[in-house]
Length: 281
Figure 1 (cartoon, rainbow, N blue to C red):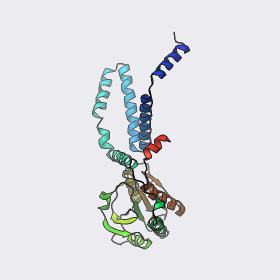
Figure 2 (tube, rainbow, N blue to C red):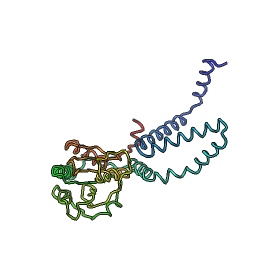
Figure 3 (cartoon, rainbow, N blue to C red):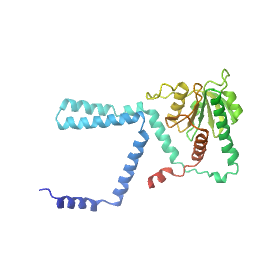
Figure 4 (tube, rainbow, N blue to C red):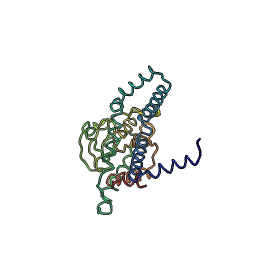
């Protein structure tokens, strides 16, 4: 006969057998599951994950109900299909591994130790912002990719190498219509213009507004496979948008853009064991 006292006795019996190693083990597994779920949220992998869960539940139910043929088919599908996610979602897996590599970096560069912080960071950011909003005011389309910790050399090589300091005038001249370098993206590395007229991969998302053209889809696409930030100027509306981590934020103000770029550059240099910091939060 089931009773509350029996349940409590069993419960406390299990609790007393749990060691410190078991607690640490459970915390690590819970943390890893949480990070995986957060990483695949709002991506194609999220839909795959839901499909796998449903398939596992149906497989167990078919076994319990002794639906032998259906159970056999589902088990074979699971066995054969195990390798398919690694092929289909190669970009997401690559981005995840790169994210892990970035966050386990031991580098830390403090802006307070940099005497030229104003010249090396603030001034180039202001030049970018002035150029972006000047282009937006004149309804000239533009696409800038600001590289993060993940190098995108395969993208850089598709364009023309420039290796120049950032200036408002140079950026504006690059995107003037009917000039040799205006069609494509400018890649900025370490707050220097690395390359222009670069070709970017287009996002495969189907849920985007039809108002977003090729330039916006390319900006989103490159942000899906790296930790970069894309700045997009629409020639139709003159609006400025930002693409980051596969998401797009439209109609960005000058003040917000400055804060985003400044924070992005600071984080690009500072990653002091962020996984451990996240864990202890």
